[in-house]
Amino acid sequence: MANKITDIIVIDDAIPKALFNIWREEVYNSNEWRYYPYTDYNPINQGVENVSEEHKLDDTPKFQLMYDVNNLTHLTQSIVDIQASLCKISSYEITRMRINALSNHREVPQHHPIHIDTPADDKSGLVLSCILYVNDSDGDTLFYSNETQEIVQRVSPKENRLLAFPAELLHSSSPPRDTMTRFMCNTVYTYNV
Image 1 (tube, rainbow, N blue to C red):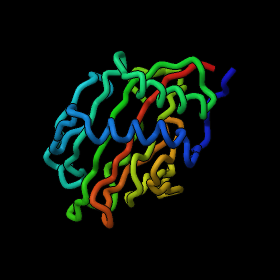
Image 2 (spheres, rainbow, N blue to C red):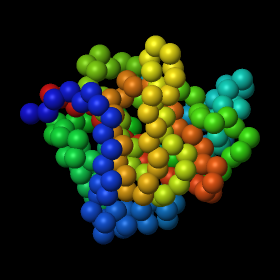
Image 3 (spheres, rainbow, N blue to C red):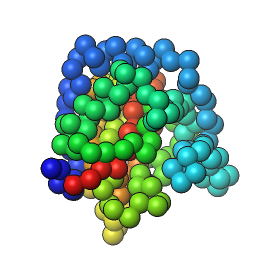
Image 4 (tube, helix red, strand yellow):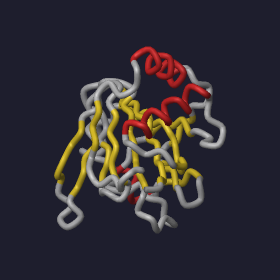
């Protein structure tokens, strides 16, 4: 039986190398990539929404690969299952799965808007956000204090690094400055204990 996950978990070389390499090629070569200029995924209505005019400078135009969580390929389902197993959750549902490709964009601030990944209608508090970094890059994931919103931890992107954390933690991404693109796969799980 799983316990409620309360800590930030970082696991390097999370997915077996051969499987990761095949999946990464599937990601890079997918025909499903879409360009979303100044948009974000809204988990409430399961759709993509425009970023408001006043927040456009806070965000990076991005390419996203949105997954239909009810129709994952066998390969992608294997990635989902391995992540869940590493985090010791066995009874779960996926509320969102997407891949972001953030480009080197020097005009935006040092980080994107601070947010949480918990669905608005979730009352259990048992929501886990996993980030699987697809490539080596800069553009850290930042975690913040609830009280002061000061940075309390940062995790750097590294190929095949899994970052898992309670989805209610305040966090943000930051755009790459020294590399061209930061690829990451974000999977949000609801789970039972």
